[in-house]
Image (cartoon, rainbow, N blue to C red):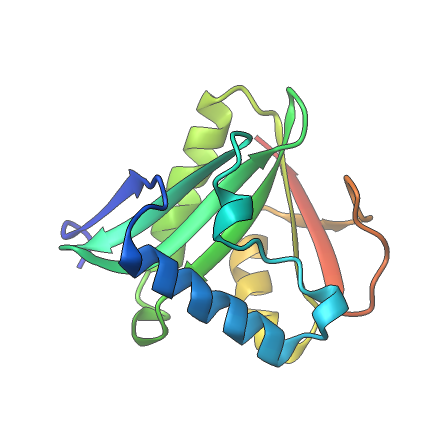
Length: 155
């Protein structure tokens, strides 16, 4: 699998990534109360402070992730997702390695994230822990929320 999957900066103009993100939003809304969903839609992801990557196997989107600049030193990990039929195949780890290296290359010294607190998000939390993220207080504009956990790490 590894050598077929490539990670590219995505301008979010393609129909396939639009459908992939629509499914992401649907899944987040199905597992989390609306007021606790912090996933960004296509328009929000097209903002200049966000760099978005797609993981492609051939021309098929199998995963994605993004970094949102909070300030010169601090960025937020957003939109981490793996295609349902590719979960537990290493896609998320490939993306994490790539995004951590890219965020560091962009000059960020800290990367933080918000994810869900329920059992549905356990695989995501385990991934982030494996990559050195530690639980922390809410950051940026986030407020404490029973449905959210916050994690951060130095780069």
